[in-house]
Length: 262
Image 1: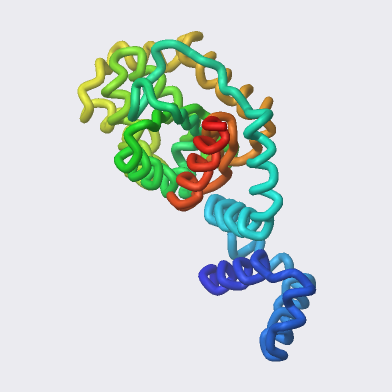
Image 2 (image 1 turned 135 degrees about the vertical axis):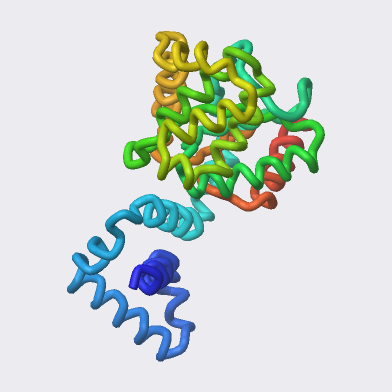
């Protein structure tokens, strides 16, 4: 039932514009009309079916809306070349990739989000393919993921101990996302032990004002940019929302480099 409703919702979100729909076949237009009628008449069916699946529903809707509004998004990105969002420079926070490249990517993400996990795979591929890109992780946990903020605090506490261990821990937080959701802090402790963290110091630091303020500062910065979802990436001031394919990042990077060479 849930799988069927995901399919229906995906089809509905990605429905073409009325102008485009005129060119479609009668059976498809009829199906579109029937789906709309079912959803309008029985919204409680969807809500009941998605109980416990809120993160999947959220990610699906985000992807669909991004695709539907692609032209508007590209226009906004081009405008940001001249008026970019500039994240605050904070010394001694972990960074991946190039140390002196021409492209900086800042991720505002949630360790418990399926979209963020998918996007992280894309980012790692991008870093391997482009030696002039640096990557910086920032926090924007969503309220319906109860382990998102604890994971963020663990990550920042480990970063105080060792930046490279924090980078390794960052990857584990995404790859072990489901286990963390099920086992909570026990899994976070197991992963921290796996990368060799000082556990006594870690348990002290996750409640320290410094670590809490670091996470809160990221969330505040995300809000100041108008980011209400995760992940959102800031590429030299230009935003990319959602788990975009590597080609999207490469296209934006190309636009940025062409703009900077003028």
